[in-house]
Image (tube, rainbow over all chains, first blue to last red; front, side, top):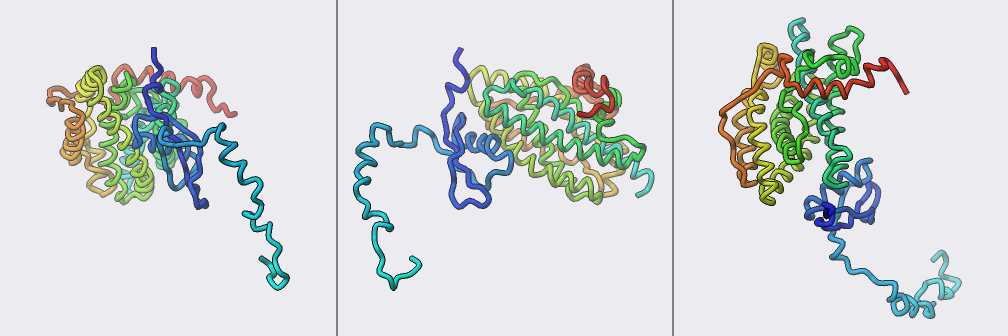
Length: 97
Length: 254
């Protein structure tokens, strides 16, 4: 017997809390389509008044970086300290930057 | 408040409380049996809305009765013959299609009834209704969705949904019956004249059933009796399970 959820799509849920400015990833769930996913997100992730706005997106629509990409994605920035503001010595007259 | 109005309001609050606790309990029977986890949690939320509503109606009934009884006495210490809920709501949960069709019939009913009760001259009833209006908007969105999905789904889901519609149709007529008690309250601007809701209910339900490729049944049979305490055999069994802990250990707290 196939589990009912095997026929359902996986969705990622993002919730914006009352005082939050941005939507934060809170988890994932199964649903038939995006409308149903939104309803389940309401029931599964905002039961304790966690949010004022919900986004759902099909997990398969997210293009994610892979662990194998780490070398070429992030290492090259390690030797470029001048990209950080703290790298620069400020002249004295510029206080409180 | 005159004695007659007070007695009628007590009866009315009890009826509405009975409706809420019975349906709430039936929905709660799905907990851990839902088709999948997300639906299990979502439907349990609906059960909690109904049980919360029952508490508010019973608390008000207890206040009007003013004889030392509490909300718990109304829920747990009355037998099936004392219960005044609609028969539709006490039917066993059946399969998922059956529960969702019953839910749709009830949700459309409350979507029409509660906004009117919100206008009640009785402030407590109006306040309870106001909370219910918001809940019902969401409940209806869910049950409508499910009936569309199941009716217009696979051959099997269509068959089961149509079977549920046919099996439950005769229990829907009772929702629109008025008696002396409810007429007195409707005339006083306290209760809702439910007889006037039937046309709108039928139109809304027919639209949804038709969209779900389901057939709207003929009005060929009707069962009544819930409002006078004459129930199907199902309520007694349900109450036995619902009341066993309270009756075994009266007043127990933990």
